[in-house]
Image 1: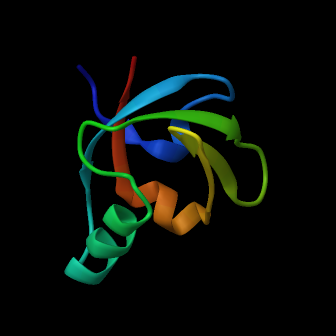
Image 2 (image 1 turned 90 degrees about the horizontal axis):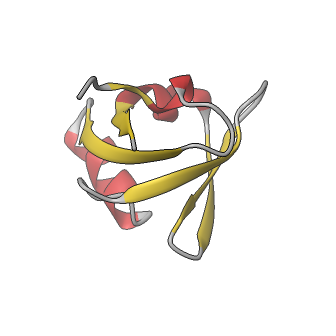
Length: 75
């Protein structure tokens, strides 16, 4: 399975989180948002501006810089 940054996934697609590139603080923040390794997320919005994703029943808004560091594979 190919791993790519979260912001490369199209709207309406599902992705599985593989890893988070970045420092301890960023990884901790992303984990606290409910995005742990193996979690399946759905892309709700990915055009210009922040991404909106769904993790379970929760919708999250992610800035492009943060999304770039979340490595995922499409499912």
